[in-house]
Amino acid sequence: MVSPKVVEQTGAIRTDIASFVPANGKPQETDEFLLNISIPIATGPQSSRTTYSSGRDLTVLLLPYSPPGFDVLLGLDFLRPYHITMWNGTFVLSN
Image (cartoon, rainbow, N blue to C red; front, side):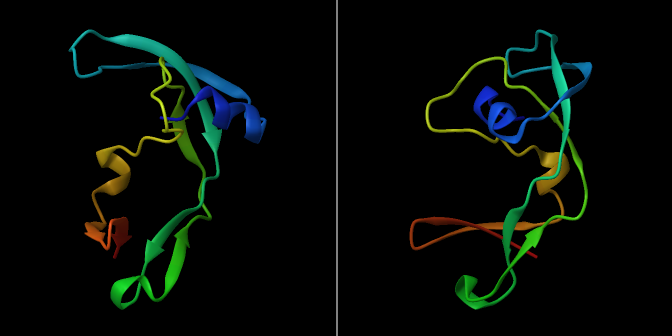
């Protein structure tokens, strides 16, 4: 999911309306977009080398609210193939 700020900055065009179920369990609808987003993925010890997950378009949904300090929320469908750790106070996604 992405914030309205991401949609505005990327000039994304809405492709559809999608349903999702938030933590409260009540289904909601929101706008759907197709974006090519690069996300850094650590490939070496202690993040010494980095690659980016890119080269594919991701279907993203517009956040129905604006959490302060967040513009992109990654779902388990994206995170599942990666290893997630904290290193020196930094969130590290690695393969």
